[in-house]
Amino acid sequence: MQDLYEATHENVHLAVEDALEALYIEVISGHKSVRTETNIGRRAPLHATSVGKVILAFGGDDLLASVGETPLRQYTPYTVTNFRRLCQVVATVKEEQVAAVHSEFTIGVSSIAVPVFNSAGQFAAALTIVARAGTNYSRLVPALRTSASAIGRRLSPAVGGGA
Image (cartoon, rainbow, N blue to C red; front, side):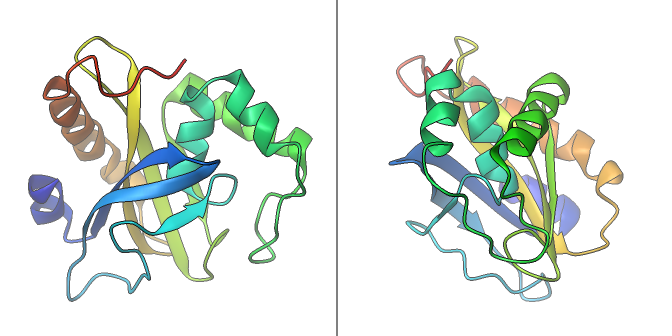
């Protein structure tokens, strides 16, 4: 994660699912990066964040169904609150193995996330870069995927195991 931060100088976060929320387990923020309220141990909604959408895509059908059992809170005018639309977004994330969110949780903040698979190939976490809205994410995806792969190789099969 430190290498990813050094390459991008943007915020880098690692999150897992816990109690139908994204739980941040590692956070690297820079002085010049967009300001976020994310700290280790902070929680965020699955439906309104890029890490959350990755978790929904790879955490199993039961997880997505559970999220759909309650109303999806609108954090900004751009938050996906329609469950059918969320399912479409999650299907695309699963296919492309990348999720991008633009001002859905916080106005002016965008993020892009990819899945982290453990050494047995099981989903374990979501890795994200958080930056100002309008950031060109296409140039960041290769570095993000490389970092996710490196993190995953270090995780034993006991870490993760989602669908």
